[in-house]
Each structure stands twice: as C-alpha cells, then as structure tokens.
Image 1 (cartoon, rainbow, N blue to C red):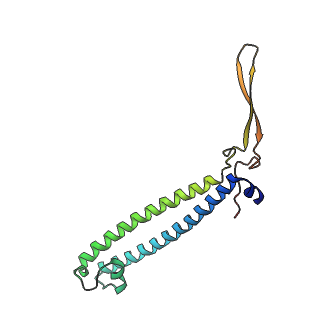
Image 2: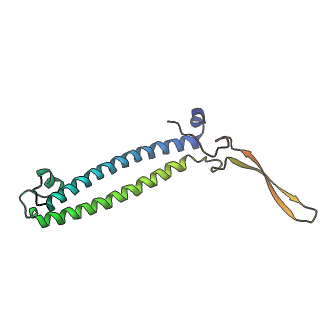
Image 3: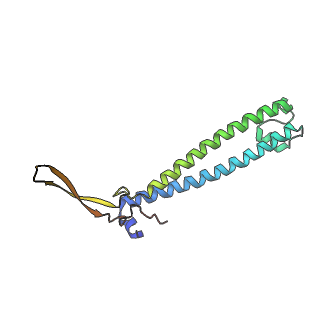
Length: 158
C-alpha cells in the first residue's frame, strides 16, 4: 500500500494516527518498565544490605521516603518497609506489563485490513441457485480486496 492511499483514505488516516499514538504510548510504557526494574534491583540491594546489618546510603532513605535519623532506621522496621515497597513495586510492574501486552495486541490489530477484516476477499453479489429437487443454495461472488491486495493486512508506513 502506498502512502498516497493513506492520504486519500480517511479510514487509513485514522488507523495511522491511532498507530502513531499507540506506538508512542508503548515506548513510554517500556521505558517505565525499565525504570521499575531498576528500582526493584535497587530496593533488593537495600533489603540485602539491611539483612546483612550493613548501613544504607543516604540515597536509600530518600528512595524510601524516610527521614535520616528517624525511628524507621531500625533494622527490622527497614526490612518491613523495604518488603512493602518491593511488593507494591512488583504489583506496579505487573500492571505495566499487562498494559504493554494490551497495547501490543491493539497495535497488531491495526494491521488487519479494515475493509475485508483480514480475509483478503470481499463478498460480491449474493445469488441463490435452485436445484431441480427444489433445494435453494446460496452462493456469493468473491473479489480480492483492493485495499490490502488480498493479503488481509495493511502496511503502515511512518
């Protein structure tokens, strides 16, 4: 499919704009997932250091939202706080993963030709043939979809 078809067909213009919007959202979600993974790794390192009895860097207290020198600096309380934050972050990660999966599915569905629904063929005129016994048999003419060229999928060029 050439880019001239996209500019001339309002359906294809809508699909292309939806594709670009979804692609942008997908990139942002994938970056967010990478940030969450980095945060989880950092939190796991803090938890491991706490379990070993090591002191945490000042940055850890900022990440945890705990004022330095507060009662939260006790080892057991830090472990509880870290475990809670890790679980919330894992839940957040799962939600972002589900969102990414849904966006990928939506992007994939945009490649399906809107005219033929992915069949590559369009129904033509419907006819009814009567047999000698009186039975009526419906039949249809099929023609190749002009939008996708019979492939059932369209190409979205950016």
